[in-house]
Length: 486
Image (tube, rainbow, N blue to C red):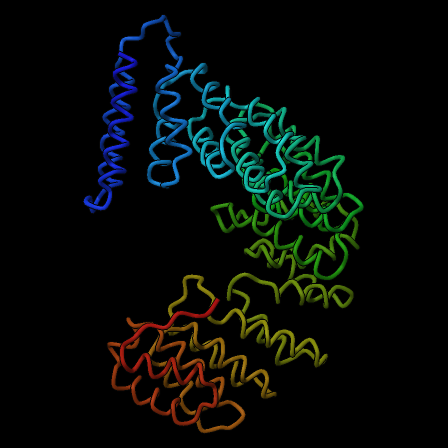
């Protein structure tokens, strides 16, 4: 039987190659006969006893030949056999043993197929290949496949690649570490993180975030209070995604540890992300307020801006008290200006109108302009009315330009009418043009008000000096789409 099948295979191959110039679909024909041959080999009654999961030498050789075939479609047939046929560890080991015998291109394909096969019996051969090969493509594919077939014991090897490997291998190792399965993987990553350079620690915390490794939150909290600003920031970013209300008190220490400026602002936002996941708006600030109660006056003042980012009625009571305290007025104002919605518009307007410190009034006005269009349950008309009120409070041209820019977020025909007169004012016309095309970008706003928008777009085309804005205006007039460049 084996001799007959071998001869049959040779005849099919010889026939197809000899008559290639007469066969328009020669490779399709060859693939068809190859599938038949694979089925026959898989079904043959062996002349010697094989283990239940062992591949016959004839079938194995045919699959190897397919994986080495110059034609990619033929190689795909071989790889598919590895992925889905001849189940069992013995077969997996037989396939994996071919890695060192194949061409680099075929080895890369086999590594991918073994990863998809999902049998850890291939792991030792893959590790041996990584130790022996210096081929860049093979190493990248091997690292990726290790993520599918390895476990906690492979974390150290993969982390070492992230630390010192070439760029392509580092990227593959990060993917591999995300995919690594089995118990203890996340803790193995944490153990490696403790002794890795700061740059690697940052990457490993991103991996833990992607893995949703909630059991590593204690380690992240400890890192957030460490000495290195890069790892502190990375830990707070991970906690912003993974932590919950019960961790807010510890995250507060990360905010206090952060350097003033960009690091602290980012840390505050990550506390905000955690609090925003609390469904009840009235409860979002509760954990943060409880944590602040245990702090001294100076630290509570620092955390006012964090409280402002979280918002809510309970937070507002504390912030208003700070606003009315001469010593804490500035901190209270910063908190108010960080508010996540427009519920504090009356307080901001009061500051703009009454605060004798010009810088405070300017800061409050910019905050008012920022929050006016925010989505928070108000109608679009209410948002526009608030933005118009902010425009009336403006004393400087840069503030008026900011109002015109924010107007494009309020999708009303009344917004178009509000912006349109500024096309006639040289200081504001370019921003007005941009806001008009931003509004026109939304077909559900533009089409019901076509005549009004077309007239406005004609004015934009006439006055704008920005080629992109003019192009967008022309496209929208023709009812075409426009995609913002990346």
